[in-house]
Every structure is written in C-alpha cells, then in structure tokens.
Image (cartoon, rainbow, N blue to C red; front, side, top):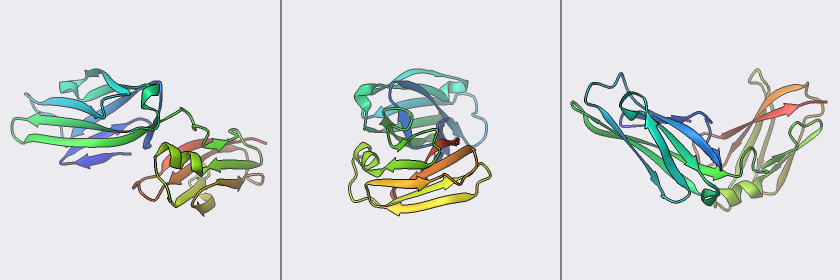
Length: 190
C-alpha cells in the first residue's frame, strides 16, 4: 500500500497494512521527482515502544529500516517521513501498519491447502483492536480472477478450494475501515 501526503510517498515491500513481529522492514519515502540538493528526510515512529529505526540510508536518507519487536504485537504504528527541501519547505507522508505474529498470524490455515481454507476473523479483530467489523474476504487466482467472495462479521469463514487447480492464490481481507485490503499468498495443492 502506498500513501501520498503532500507529495511524499511512504511505502514498504510487504504491500499490506501489517508487518510480522521480529522483522526489520524497509520503508521508502520519495517526493515527486528527484530530490534536489540540500534535501533531507527525517523519520519517526509513533508510538515509540515496540519499534525502532535501525538505520537510514540512500540519497538524503530517503530509506529507513525499522525493526518491529514482539513488544509491538497488536500495535498500530504510524511511520512518518518528513522531507525538507530548499524550494518547497517541509512536506510529510505516513504509513500506518500493525504488527502481527508473522506470516498469517494464525488468521488463515492450512497453507498449503487442498480442500477447505479457514479464515479466523476474530483473530483479525483482536489484532486490530476492533469490534463489530464487517469483513470482505476475497480469493483470487494467479490471473486475477475472483474465485470466492465472502462477507462476514466474525467467526471462522470456510472457503472451499477443492475444485480449484493447484497454484498460487491471493487472499484479500478488507476490514471495511482500511482503504486497501491485507493480501496473503495461499498455495492450493491437491
């Protein structure tokens, strides 16, 4: 997911709103166009517990490596990049991410799957500290075709993949609050 605020783009390679605990994730902040001379990037994290900036690097420190520890499990962090330019002044962008146990965080199982894929919506609600959320769960094949769609408020959703061919699928889970879904790779293998 990319977020653009006042011309600054903040993104990370997971492409979702979640990152696994115990990992270091690279974030990128890029302004529109090449940064001019005397440009500087400043990175910050809120809240400050459970995550730390390991390093900044690249042209004018436009990249940051951020470590998410187990203390941050279930926390929603706001990663902010500010860019100071001689001509435009101060611009900023941010990305909100929440820290999971890693991988699927037990949200879906088994993976690989041969018949029924289970999606535990209550675990998602607990990780995001949300209640009364309506979830949109969609499964796409490797060609981008929708093969299953479910809408539910909680519990465990069952997705039957027994008639789907072997391959890689993408599970999209949208909580109705975020603009973009969390996306997970599912392997169907019979």
